[in-house]
Length: 281
Picture 1 (tube, rainbow, N blue to C red):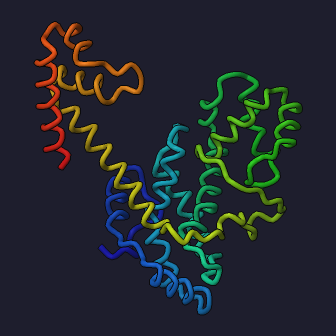
Picture 2 (picture 1 turned 30 degrees about the vertical axis):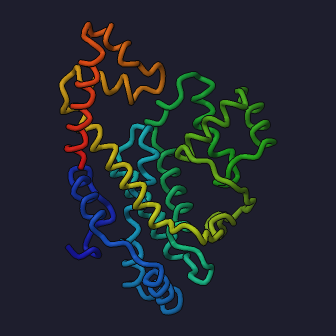
Picture 3 (picture 1 turned 45 degrees about the vertical axis):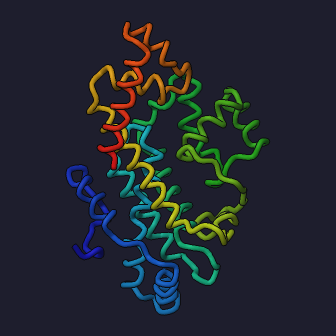
């Protein structure tokens, strides 16, 4: 399928297909991105803009996942994020020396956050009366999309009669579980950006990092599916021995618990690991 034919407003029914199509779009090299961005910046080449947008749709999906705890449809979050991506492409200056993926994150998050705040179902994120009041008032009390400064947190907490820790927690949720590293006071958010967006990392390519993150997620999904294919005893032994964050059990612990020899536990464990390896590879 031609990448430019993929819709930017995926429906719930076709969202799985949409994700598959997006993942099939090749990423641009740094040189390709620079050439397209220059054509758009200097000549207003709309075809170049479309290619830049399409090659970064997977970034929107990745960011939208960080807002999945709000009870909203992923397709809706992605659609809003795509609007932010288009705004970023329109404003991107290739002469800044930074990749589009770094620059676009701010605009994508901003659009998703606006959608999140406006959706009434988000009241689920707050349980007490004070938290609900905080939820519906926090965004309107913030002057910009930038993180709150300590004195602003204190003022908002006092005005809404909530703890400062509650203000920090609610802002943390708004930001998709990510905290920005800088501040920029500006009334006109549409035409100003975080300085950190323009820091160039000579040792890392954000596009490659995105691929690595996606690969890691796929590996975790494969491991989960492989574990589910094991019998209950084998799965329990592996979880107790290798996947438990606390109170990892020894062979002798499991021997007593399952009423078999420690050697038998070791054999089951080894067989299960071999099966996992064959399924994942």
